[in-house]
Amino acid sequence: MSHDLFEAAKTAMAKAYAPYSKFPVGAALRTEDGRVFTGANIEVASYPEGWCAETTALGHYVMGGGGKITEIAVIAERMAKCSPCGGCRQRLAEFCRPETKLYLCDNTGVVETVTMGDMLPYGFRGDILK
Picture (cartoon, rainbow, N blue to C red):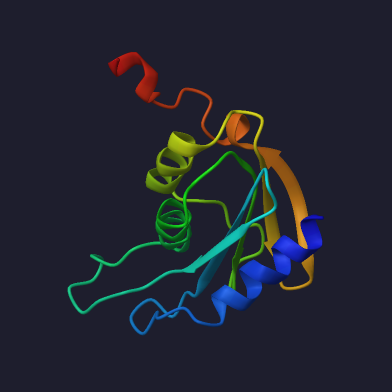
């Protein structure tokens, strides 16, 4: 099922608004019930005050009712195996489990599969705040 998530991320990347960095990125999240939420990076003139593709996808996910995220795909036009930045790793960790699959893609498909635990082994967890 990872290829359809890659395709969704690639379609989202085509909608990126990246006039300053010229670095379009797309992301797609799949929930346990099969829903897919996508996002692209969006830049603004007060660069770097825009937001990342993963953040856009998470916004759609939250507004769509959330749920357990089981898979994530990320693709960048100019970089194979683009992984989420540090801030997005923490944002994703808020809604994922360490075993959530993260697909790092190039323009042809999934190049490497890791887990969120691999990407952020010591992430800050909100449950300690309770």
